[in-house]
Image 1 (cartoon, helix red, strand yellow):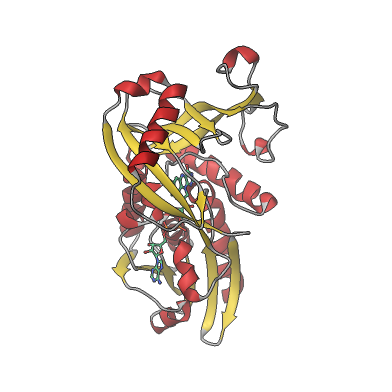
Image 2 (cartoon, rainbow, N blue to C red):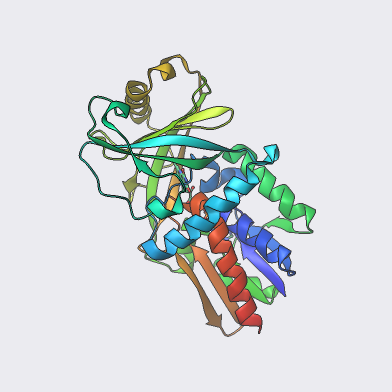
Length: 314
Ligand SMILES: Cc1cc2nc3c(=O)[nH]c(=O)nc-3n(C[C@H](O)[C@H](O)[C@H](O)COP(=O)(O)OP(=O)(O)OC[C@H]3O[C@@H](n4cnc5c(N)ncnc54)[C@H](O)[C@@H]3O)c2cc1C
């Protein structure tokens, strides 16, 4: 089939790669270049954060975990497997996603910083988006895929050039009439590597969600998760507070050179929308609303897109 994928973030690129591998002719149409997408801002560690429903997310996350581990052997992909810890002030029960990671365990007392009473220890792929997104783009182009700048007011407009449309517009799907989408604003600080290898999350920090994600050549310090906030402007006071919280967890960060400040708007939704819609002009497959977990779910969701396309064309 001739397929147009709307969107060149991690969801659109991954879906497009899987579709072209399945034998379709695929083009990506996107309003903004990949470097200006939410995906370019992602931290990006494998972690099913703010994405629903749990059973489907678990399945997509497990598939993606395995694929990211597989891709990590290729240095061009910018992926590294890291061990890390998620900290809690109480003693949490097992998380719903525990079976998606191979080495989950609870932290022992002596592994916890003083203010904490519990923690999860596990390994996860960490993805350096400034390397990974160009890697995906190059892989798509190498198999004959094309990326064109084009902005749509409705996904069905893409039937002008395609038999089937895959809508991976992220938060942009609001312009197509989806009122269930909400921006979840995330501000981060990108600093130079100072020899860190372990990711640390403190989602329940009283002053705001806190995380340290050491990638191959830099470290992402976060963050914020502000529902309904839409400003893409960096807030200096927020940045100072993020740095302070992260340095308290990892004092070696005090020497880290700040490389840049970024803000992204996560595409929050009560449930990821991954389903076909029969339109008068053909089938639209929606694949958006991945919240804080687009990198974590992309390969699992892309496999489902391929299956839905096969069903639609049968
Ligand atoms: C600070 C921060 C940290 C994060 N950390 C992580 C993490 O550690 N792990 C993780 O898994 N996820 C993380 N995320 C979440 C992740 O970034 C998102 O879930 C993911 O980027 C969503 O990808 P997407 O391709 O759906 O959307 P986007 O990357 O936003 O791409 C949407 C695409 O659609 C195009 N588009 C939109 N509207 C139109 C239109 N009308 N016409 C044509 N094209 C259109 C856009 O131009 C763009 O190309 C983080 C996000 C933020 C902000």
